Image 1: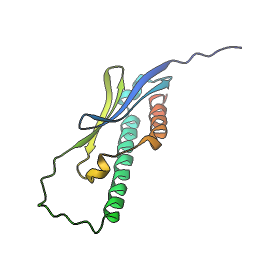
Image 2: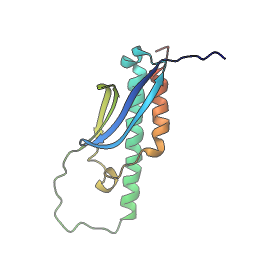
Image 3: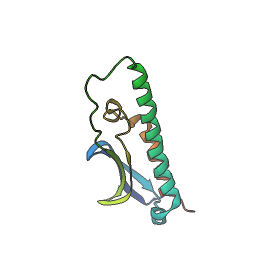
Length: 136
């Protein structure tokens, strides 16, 4: 039996909200292509991940507001503090790629309870595929 060896490179996926970790996962990329680092494919993949998370938050905000339609604010509206999600993919200690997107536009009950765990396997598979592409 002949064993094939693959070069495996370990990456880290981190999503934070104002320096608080929302989700952190380590994942392996077999046959990592270093040229993927500056590729349009990687940029588009990370952009699509952020857009997917943002769309999910938008729908959850709409559901929350719809479910609480009879709730009225008694207090004066307060100024909204700008908050941002930060998605990073790291190789070792080096940030490989990062992207920020606004969090303050979603209802606080939604943004502070964001949960992408059901989608993380698909997200990491997409990133892994892009990082191991031979043709970019």
